[in-house]
Image (cartoon, rainbow, N blue to C red; front, top):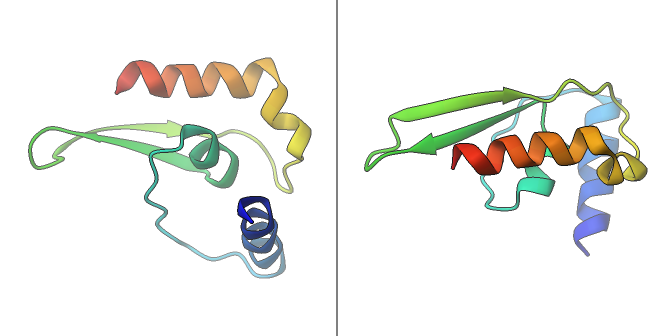
Length: 80
């Protein structure tokens, strides 16, 4: 089901790009679907760090198994 939702989201974006805010605790999901990942911290989430996902669209499923993908996820984990 999750992969179907990802495909739907990406297909819709490919047809007509739009802005959306995705709130998730799944870093793989955040990196794969987003152009930017914002890490919010603090008692009122006023501290943030922004990570840019520099990967052109459309993105392939195989990209999730690359060193670049893993390195970005690791950088975000370290910021948490």
